[in-house]
Image 1: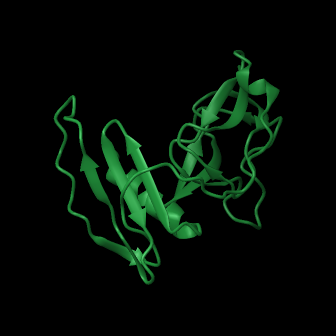
Image 2 (image 1 turned 120 degrees about the vertical axis):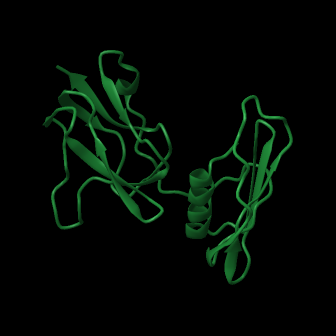
Length: 173
């Protein structure tokens, strides 16, 4: 079942795209988002399969924001900035991946006029901030959670990133 935060992120991404309709189905849960001329009407979420564990009831659908969609089901391709070329180092078991904890927009620096938090060759520790991932107008500072040296930056500034997508490769100390 999709969490409310995930539904909000889908609405935001659809609002930023030129899609008129988005359908998605997973494990018996269905969601359809349709663009209305002046507003997005939030999700009709349907659960067809009985959940394995108890789940809190979903909140009723609400009007969300101007210029967005309404909810139903089926994967739709969305245009996004071209991802960085896949690195051969991503599969190197000696390197640790710093991954995105959420869907959002990757920012390498705190603001456009400041340098990147980290670059290739920089040393980081567990609490070092390596980037920001913006989701739903919230800027989330991402920590390295590993001590080592940045070997590679896998995404470009202002690129849309997915949950669990590798952002950096670190050679641990």
